[in-house]
Amino acid sequence: KNQVEQSPQSLIILEGKNCTLQCNYTVSPFSNLRWYKQDTGRGPVSLTIMTFSENTKSNGRYTATLDADTKQSSLHITASQLSDSASYICVVSDRGSTLGRLYFGRGTQLTVWP
Amino acid sequence: EADIYQTPRYLVIGTGKKITLECSQTMGHDKMYWYQQDPGMELHLIHYSYGVNSTEKGDLSSESTVSRIRTEHFPLTLESARPSHTSQYLCASSGPQETQYFGPGTRLLVL
Image 1 (spheres, chains in turn red, brown):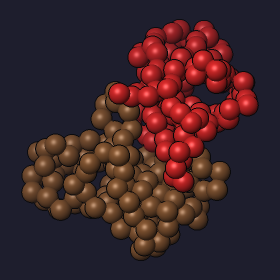
Image 2 (image 1 turned 180 degrees about the vertical axis):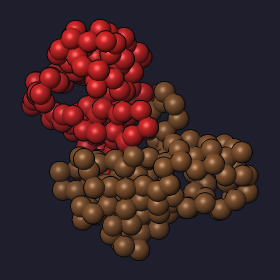
Image 3 (image 1 turned 30 degrees about the vertical axis):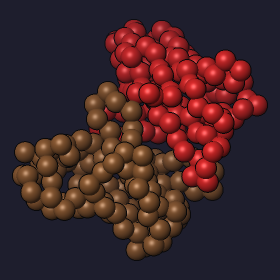
Image 4 (image 1 turned 60 degrees about the vertical axis):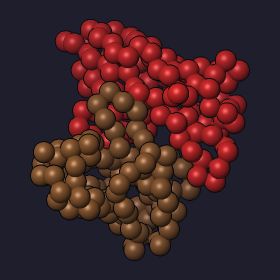
């Protein structure tokens, strides 16, 4: 069973609108949570990384939140642009091994229409 | 843009052929990884390396093999390709901060 669940699976919004993507996880012990953006035909690119003590982190129009108690994270995109169309992947790292194993969500496919 | 490269970007090949997917990075990272990703699905780790002459199998069973003779180079080889190997293969590397930088991927189609 995947320990990182993302919702919605896909989302269509109009250019200029805001949206929020959700990530719930059961990974334990928790180390950090990352949001990646993956354009079609490309590899994922890191947007934010959050550790246990961080509640909010911003990167331009992207703002990630983390509630480590409820094991939930969200990625809020403000004033969406056509270039935001991509898959957004939530990745959680555990502290259980030297490798710092990564657990990947299946991603939310965001499409921004003009 | 990360300095990690994969070739070829696309490959169509017949069943039974031997193939090698190339991955190289110029960031001096010790750790490198290979992932397999099917459309709409999560990434699955198939191989990783902590450094030169270090290779380990990942979570997803794979018939591929890897080698790490040089820090910057981490090729993946399939001795006999099958249609079930059709997928996207992503290479990544990470430095001391553990953030993984991904290459553009190789899309493999085995007929």
